[in-house]
Amino acid sequence: MPSDTVGPLARPVGVVESTMRCEDLDLMFRADPSLHSVAVMYLDGGIGLISRSRFAQLMSGPFGYGRALWARTPAGRTADPAPMIVEETALVADVCEQVSRRDQVRRYDDVLVRRPDGRLARVSAARLYETLAALMAVQAIRDPLSGLANRARFLHRLTAACRDGDQTGLAVVYLDLDRMKHVNDTLGHTVGDRLIVSVAHRLTAAADPGSVVARLGGDEFAVLTRVAGPRQDHAALALGERFRRAVAATDPALPAGAHSTASVGVAVAGPGADGATLLREADAAMYRAKQAGADRVQTVHGVGALTDGRDDDVLAAMDRGELRLFYQPIIGIDDGRVWSVEALVRWQHPLRGLLTPDRFLPELRRLRQLPQLDRWVLDRACADVARWDAVLGDRAPRCVNVNLTIDTLGAAEFTSLVLDSLRRNGSAPSRLRVELPESADFAQLQDAAGRLRDLRDTGVGIVLDDMGAGSATLRNLSALPVTGVKIDRSFVAGMLDNRSDFAVVKLLGDLGRSVGIDVTAEGVEADEQLEALRQLGVRFAQGYHLGLPAPAEHLTALLRTGARPRGVASIPAEPAARPATAGRHRV
Image (cartoon, rainbow, N blue to C red; front, side):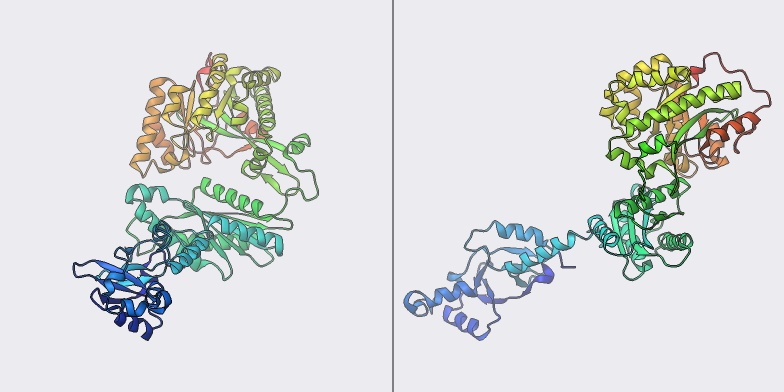
C-alpha cells in the first residue's frame, strides 16, 4: 500500500548557501543531471528553493545573455524565498491540497520535507499527486483500519464469483464480534481498533489461498471462499469453526481483556445463487448464532434462487398456505404460568425448508408488501387466541403479542385494522398486545402516538420491544401510551457478570412497578438469570430456556397437560381463576 505520509516519498536535496554565485550553481546543476532542485540557506536562517527548470531559463536569458548577466549574482537572489516546507509526517492528501492552492507559477515546484533531525529532503508535486491517486485507488477497495478488503470490494468479488464461475461450493463466512462494545466501553476505542486489526490478521492467516477476507464495517467481517467434499453441511461447519477459533484465540500483543469471541454464520451456495442472497443468508445464520448464545457457528447450505422455477413471492406463499405462525411462551416468573405468547412468522418453503423472517422479510420490505403480511399475522394470531379459549379454557394464554412493522403502524387506518381483526375472530381487545417495531425511530412512533392511544383505550396492550437498545429509550415511555416493556436480551445476557447490565435490568424492573407497566425480560437462557430476575421483581420472562418458538398445536398440547418449560416451578394441577380484568396483565 502506498505511504500516506510524505516522509517515505522524499528524496535527498542539494543544499547551498545563499551567497553562492549563480555561475557556480549552474556548474553544479550541469554536473548532476538528477539534481532537480536545491534548498538555499540564508544567513538569517531562512530557507529558499531554486528549481532546475526555472534556473535554467534564468541562465539562458533573452538572446542567450543570461549567464553573462547573472553569473556573479548570489544564488539567494534568484530563489523562491518562501517555498512550501512540510514535516515528514504530513499526510499526502493534506500536502496535495496545499499544493493545489499555490499560485499557478509555483504549483509544480518541489515541496521541501523536514526530517526530525532538521535535514531537508524534497518531493516533487508530480509524485505527490501520483501517490494520492494510488492511495485513493486502494481506499476504494480497502478498509483503512484493518487493511482488509472493504464492503464494496467484497460485494464486487462476490457478485463476480456468482456470475462468472461455478457457484457450487462457494461459501460466505459472516462474523460479528461478541464483545466489541464491551472492549470499547471499558478499554477505549484505541484498544478497540487494535482488536479489529488483530482479528483481521488472524482471519487472514486462517483463510485459504485465493479467499477474500473483508471488514464489512464496525465489528463485522466476511470471508469469501469455497468448501469441498460431498457433505457440504459438515464442510461448512468445519469452515466456520476454523474462523471462530481464530477469533477466540487470545492475542498476547493486546492488553488484558481486549479479546472477543465471534458469532459466525456460513452460507454455502447452490445452483442459481446470487451474491446478495448468499450474503444475506450468511448474515442471518450469524444472527441465529448470536441469538443462540454467541461464540458459535450456524450454517445454511444449498443457497440458491428462491424461485427455482416457481412463483415464490411471499404473498403467493400466503395464498398457498405455506406461511406458519410459531409461538414462544412468555412466562410469569413467580407462578410459572404461560401468561402470553409472542407470534413469530415462518415460511414452510417446499424446497428450502422452514425459513425464519430474516430470510424473506428484506425482500418483502423492498417490495413494500409488509402490510399484507402484518394483516395475515394479526388475523391468524387473533384466530388462534379464540381457538385456545375454546379448547383450553382457563389454561389459555391471557394474550398474544404481535409484532407489527412501521409500515402498518404509520397507516391512517391502523386502529380500525387491528380492531376489525379482533372483531372478525371473536377476540376481546384485552387479549392482544401490539409490539412496537424496534426499527422505528422516535419521530415515527410519536407520529403514531394518537392511534396507539386509541387502541390502548379499547384494552389493547402496547409493548415497547428491546428496551435499552436501539431506538427504544426511556424517552419513549413518557411520549407513548405504553402498557409494557421488554428488556433487551443483551442486558439479560450480561446481568450476572456486568454491573452496568445488572443496573439497567434493576432500573427497568423498578420503573415498571412504579409506573404500573408490565416488564418482560427477553433472552433468558439459564436458571441463574431467572432467579436474579425474580429477586429484582421482574414479573415476566421469555427465552429459549423457558420455551422455544413452536406451532400453535404444540403449545396447545403443552398447556392442556399443565406441563411447562424448565426453569420455574410446575404449573399447579388446578389452574387459578383468571383475574376479572384480564387487561391488567399486559406483557
